[in-house]
Amino acid sequence: MTLVPSWELRAEFAHALSKMYGAEVPAYNDLLDVAAAVNNDVLRRDGADAERLGAASRVADERHGAIRVGTPKEMREVAAIFAGFGMMPVGFYDLREAATSSVPVVSTAFRPIDPDQLALNPFRVFTSLLVIDDPRFFSPQVTAQLSDFLDARELFSEELLTLARKAQDDGGLPRGDADRYVRLATAAFKLSDDPVDRLWYETLEAISSVAADIGGVPSTHINHLTPRVLDIDDLYRRMEERGITMIDEIQGPPRWDGPDVLLRQTSFKALAEPRRFRAGDGTVYTDSLRVRFGEVESRGLALTPAGRDFYDAMIAQVDAQLAAEPARARQEVAAGIWSANLPASERELAIADLAYFTFAVASVRPNTGQPESDLATLIRDGWVVPQPIVYEDFLPRSAAGIFQSNLTSEGRKDNSRHGSNCSLDWMSGILGQPVADPYDLYAAQRQESLDRVARQLGLSNPITISNTTVHQLVT
Ligand code: OOG
Ligand code: NI
Image 1 (tube, rainbow, N blue to C red):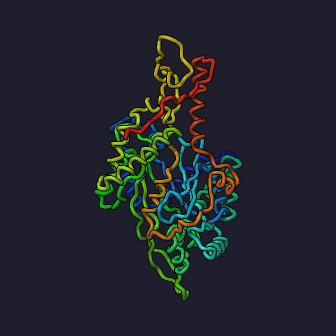
Image 2: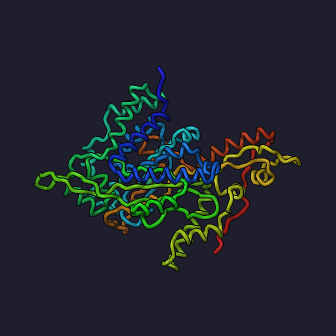
Image 3: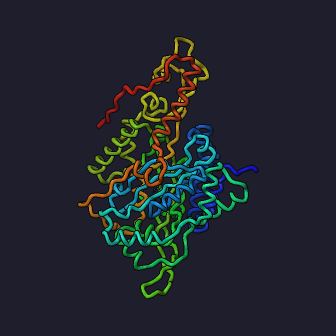
């Protein structure tokens, strides 16, 4: 029997979620319209250049979602559901540390890992786990109450989990099962109209509105769904022109004259949505909550560890300069620091080993000399050409910013206490499967292309990457 392959299941799941979220949050549909209009304009303006970081068809369909769960068991179940769609855990983000206000979660992202799979459909879900025993946020009593509350709920049915395991084991599902799997998985992330216990919700909200959104309600829901756009500054302007108030600034790197790196994101604030509540005396009534919002992103080059350190140093300099000149706009300060420091072309970024690329033998080979085995020399001498690798992951600081811009209150965090230690390995333990390190994935992709190039050029030694330039910030 022919199976619907996992990439098609993933694409259908992403479409079904998008349709559901658009019905729940109509402003999301506006965002999709504007994003599509911006992308069409950029494609018309820049032609093939606009597709250097992903084919137009991939970008048009590209979304990331965000969900939040409460227990290691829920986290494992969600991992099983995503695995059936070919989405694996990648990266670790500790938002308890990255956020200044009360965001008691640690996160990973489920996404395809293979470049071919990413090209077919890159759907990813940023998935956060509430750390219910972190004493900076929760008293022992609240921890115990949270534990009881969360243990009593069931987010995912046995049928859904069984279909997911089958999809993972077989690499796909027959049509009938596929439809059922996509339908059940989508419904599991629908905003529920089961009444929310008001007093319990408020107890948690006083500590952290994120904790209330996760542990104060009987089910989980998609928090936002984010399209990818090729010109986020243009999108920001067009949304404001439509009268939709965006958060104050675009998160992440600035717009500048060189290549985009990593990830730029912005969002509109959470909108009031009707929700049902149960009061202390048992009466059920309708009120509203503001937790779900619209976000959009643009993606640039993946940075190497050296590039990321350099990025972090530039960000620290932006912070320092803003502290000295608080009236200036962050994006403008950052653009100045970028121009003074970051190599302004893909070729130079590749030579300096600051960003990840795959390499191909140049179509016109140099007609003198022999190729060296040092990568920077091969690029400089014209033997190989770099192709950018797009950043497929997230940024903790932007994620914290996105969480924080939508909190209804600062919440409480007792910084005199020590938080429980969490790490990528700890998350692997929770999930019972390895969480991939994004750098390993990018490096492996690069290495595969270098091995191919070495064969094609007939090099007797493997190609080496020496990072001889030490990057110092201009101050
Ligand atoms: C997740 C926030 C992080 C992003 O794009 O960085 C995120 C959440 O609000 O649950 O989605
Ligand atoms: Ni997001």
